Length: 99
View 1 (tube, helix red, strand yellow):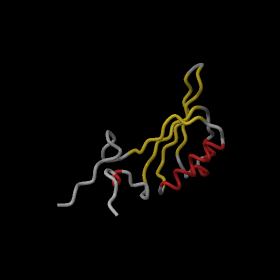
View 2 (spheres, one colour):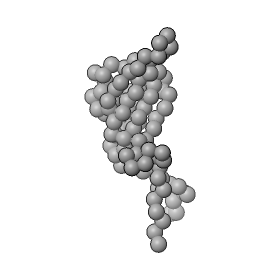
View 3 (cartoon, helix red, strand yellow):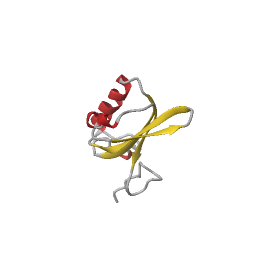
View 4 (tube, one colour):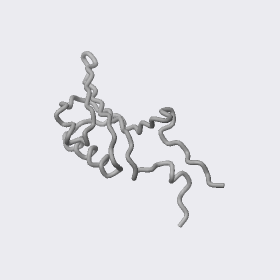
């Protein structure tokens, strides 16, 4: 069965490094429950704090588990990004076409 155009550009069955940003504070003690992601929180003066989680997750299933835990904690998600060590400007580099 042919793959939809661009399908290979989203390899969710491989380990990837993610950055997840959310509104609110999350204690570093949650790291083990969140796939071992590094947790940092920055305050924005009189506005709500922003928590950033960065780490390598095995696959889409582990990412879904992290996002479900954040949902269960009633935290507001701001963004989820795949960080690619080779090219941070395009986290979904196109794979070369076979000749």
